[in-house]
Amino acid sequence: MAYKIIVSPRAQKEIENAIDYYALYSVDAPANFIATLKEAYSTLKINPFFKVRYKNVRALKIKKFPYSLYFVFNEDENTVRVLSCFHNKRNPNKRPRV
Image (tube, rainbow, N blue to C red; front, side):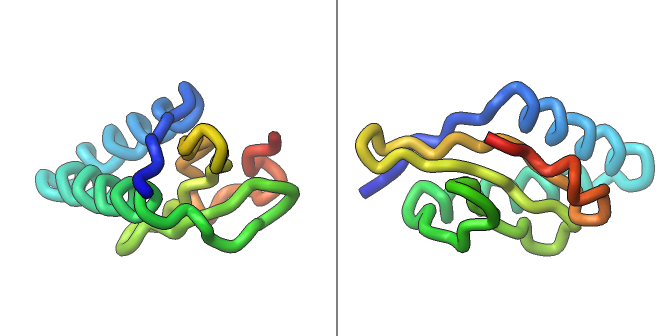
Protein backbone atom coordinates (compact mmCIF):
# COMPACT_ATOMS: atom_id res chain seq x y z
CA MET A 1 0.00 0.00 0.00
CA ALA A 2 1.39 3.38 -0.97
CA TYR A 3 0.90 6.29 1.39
CA LYS A 4 0.45 9.85 0.15
CA ILE A 5 3.13 12.29 1.38
CA ILE A 6 1.92 15.68 2.67
CA VAL A 7 4.65 18.20 3.53
CA SER A 8 3.71 20.83 6.10
CA PRO A 9 4.61 24.49 5.51
CA ARG A 10 7.12 24.31 8.39
CA ALA A 11 8.88 21.29 6.86
CA GLN A 12 8.90 22.91 3.41
CA LYS A 13 10.53 26.04 4.81
CA GLU A 14 13.16 23.97 6.65
CA ILE A 15 13.91 22.03 3.46
CA GLU A 16 14.28 25.26 1.46
CA ASN A 17 16.59 26.68 4.15
CA ALA A 18 18.77 23.56 4.01
CA ILE A 19 18.99 23.74 0.21
CA ASP A 20 19.90 27.43 0.37
CA TYR A 21 22.59 26.71 2.98
CA TYR A 22 24.14 23.90 0.94
CA ALA A 23 24.05 26.11 -2.19
CA LEU A 24 26.35 28.60 -0.44
CA TYR A 25 29.11 26.03 -0.05
CA SER A 26 28.74 23.54 -2.89
CA VAL A 27 27.42 23.19 -6.40
CA ASP A 28 26.48 19.52 -6.00
CA ALA A 29 25.23 19.39 -2.41
CA PRO A 30 21.75 20.91 -3.04
CA ALA A 31 21.00 18.38 -5.78
CA ASN A 32 22.33 15.54 -3.63
CA PHE A 33 20.16 16.69 -0.71
CA ILE A 34 17.06 16.80 -2.92
CA ALA A 35 17.79 13.34 -4.35
CA THR A 36 18.29 11.91 -0.87
CA LEU A 37 15.10 13.59 0.33
CA LYS A 38 13.19 12.00 -2.56
CA GLU A 39 14.58 8.60 -1.51
CA ALA A 40 13.30 9.22 2.02
CA TYR A 41 9.87 10.13 0.65
CA SER A 42 9.85 6.90 -1.39
CA THR A 43 10.68 4.94 1.74
CA LEU A 44 7.86 6.63 3.66
CA LYS A 45 5.38 5.92 0.86
CA ILE A 46 6.04 2.20 1.21
CA ASN A 47 6.79 1.84 4.93
CA PRO A 48 6.05 4.63 7.45
CA PHE A 49 6.29 2.29 10.47
CA PHE A 50 9.45 3.78 11.97
CA LYS A 51 10.19 4.16 15.66
CA VAL A 52 7.82 6.41 17.59
CA ARG A 53 9.84 9.26 19.12
CA TYR A 54 7.02 10.65 21.28
CA LYS A 55 3.26 10.29 21.26
CA ASN A 56 2.49 9.42 17.63
CA VAL A 57 5.38 11.34 16.01
CA ARG A 58 7.93 9.19 14.20
CA ALA A 59 11.30 10.01 12.66
CA LEU A 60 13.35 8.89 9.68
CA LYS A 61 17.02 9.88 9.41
CA ILE A 62 17.98 11.25 6.00
CA LYS A 63 21.02 9.36 4.72
CA LYS A 64 24.32 11.27 4.33
CA PHE A 65 22.87 14.49 5.78
CA PRO A 66 22.37 15.59 9.40
CA TYR A 67 18.59 15.84 9.10
CA SER A 68 15.62 13.73 10.14
CA LEU A 69 12.07 13.83 8.86
CA TYR A 70 9.54 13.96 11.68
CA PHE A 71 6.12 12.75 10.61
CA VAL A 72 2.79 11.25 11.58
CA PHE A 73 0.80 8.87 9.47
CA ASN A 74 -2.86 8.03 9.25
CA GLU A 75 -3.60 4.46 8.21
CA ASP A 76 -7.28 5.19 7.62
CA GLU A 77 -6.54 7.97 5.12
CA ASN A 78 -3.28 6.43 3.78
CA THR A 79 -1.35 9.64 4.39
CA VAL A 80 2.03 10.55 5.84
CA ARG A 81 2.25 14.15 7.07
CA VAL A 82 5.82 15.43 7.30
CA LEU A 83 5.92 17.86 10.21
CA SER A 84 9.56 18.89 10.09
CA CYS A 85 12.90 18.38 8.37
CA PHE A 86 14.86 18.82 11.57
CA HIS A 87 18.63 19.33 11.76
CA ASN A 88 19.95 16.73 14.19
CA LYS A 89 22.35 19.17 15.89
CA ARG A 90 19.63 21.66 16.85
CA ASN A 91 18.17 21.96 20.32
CA PRO A 92 16.02 18.83 20.81
CA ASN A 93 13.43 20.89 22.69
CA LYS A 94 12.56 22.54 19.35
CA ARG A 95 11.52 19.28 17.69
CA PRO A 96 7.98 19.34 16.34
CA ARG A 97 5.13 18.48 18.69
CA VAL A 98 1.67 17.46 17.65
